[in-house]
Image (cartoon, rainbow, N blue to C red; front, side):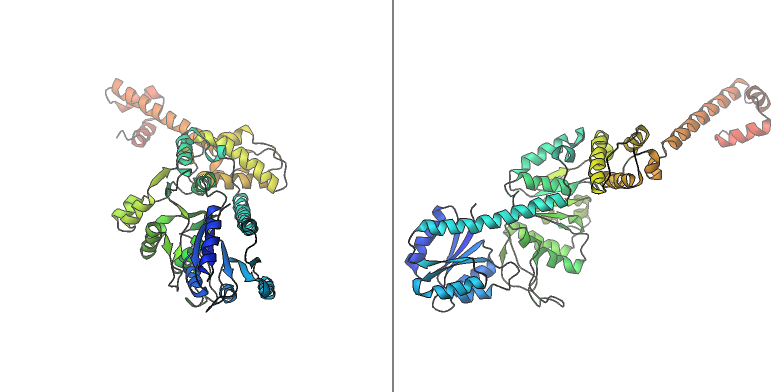
Length: 446
């Protein structure tokens, strides 16, 4: 695993020697000739590791190290020190430095082994976080994410775009699984082992949304008692998922546009640029073209986001997905609730398949969880919400509609047969003239 490394060393020859070793090993290296320049780079960019001389003119490596300790995510340090200054390096390790190496460097492999260990430990931590996030999100298998024939095209699009760095915009009604598709794009991409950081733009108050996205510096506003990383920093090397992007305020849309164009941002209350090494996947249940026409969404941002659009069909358009999804939720929630999954009887299954699901997959998930709580054996119709159990009522209404249409047709034919004579028509139909009068009015024949 390769990383971004800041190398701070005042000896130009030794600095060039170390840079060559590290770059030949595949790492991206930035260099500084003193601690002051090193601090400026740390304030404007993000690094996996800092390798610094312990003693330098002006700002020393130890001072540089200490100035970064209160950062939201302080970088890891390896120190280089002369043989006679080992005690100071040991003291720095007690304060949180990773390790130190003595100069002159006897064997370059010693440095590379140490660098690999540090970078890989960070990668393992990111991968663990990503797996825990997926577990916490309850990600179903891919065949369930794309269940139903109507999702075949979506699945192919996801696989096509995942291998690229393109920005993705996912359209779909609420509850159709936009975040699951976004996570799948992330996991299939080269960034899949880094973090997936979701943010629902509609769930954060407008005055806090900028800080959530970009972080803030200490004292940036009332209550900002310490510096804090935003979602874009937390997603470094991975993917940020901006759900309900259509709800983002116009003023903040301009700042997001800058991130997409220039790949840099600033924390609230800060003045240093931070590199945005992230992939952006956004989602909306709105028609963004209509939002642009109504001047509620920036046209330039729309085109930046809409590089690769993916439209998710609602659950009512992929009814063949309902049985496997219902069975998945049955197994999942039964285990969570400590119950044995007993299955779904025919009546309940029929009701699940015929219901229009205005809340889509999320509504199906909630219905199944409730049913499992109520059921002691098979899930039956009476374990489902009332609106799902009205199949018989619908059939009765349909039957009444058919009978009314038939009755109307008989009355019309009898009237035509008797030239509009209501007495003869009533006699043929076996009803009183008063009843016929009522029926004519009911069927709109008066």
